[in-house]
Amino acid sequence: QVQLVESGGGLVQAGGSLRLSCVASGRTFSTMSMGWFRQAPGKEREFVAAINWSGFATYTADSVKGRFTISRDNAKNTVYLQMNSLKHEDTAVYYCAAPRSMGWGTSYSSENNYAYWGQGTQVTVSS
Image 1: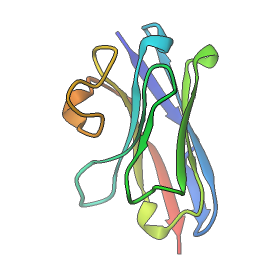
Image 2: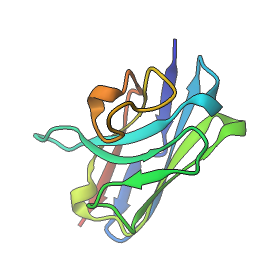
Image 3: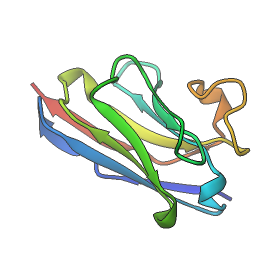
């Protein structure tokens, strides 16, 4: 069973930075594509970023493009989300997720293609 544990959330002022981490266990991490999603209060969960199993392919949502960067360290079984120039509207619970198979299937941005989820980490950006 795959387990995902996020960390690194917190309270930050607008314009600041945070780096989220997600440690995976239960499967060979280097064969796992990964994704980050977020859910703000009263809103649906939305795609933020994804990275394929090798790390050579990354994708980010338009809303965070140029500010957020996804990366991974297969030696540490960890995927990261570096968040810079944070805005109040980035406030949300952030989740890392992994698909059941090696890839995402039809879409890296659809949460339906992810089978495993972490518990989430709260990011609050004060304006």
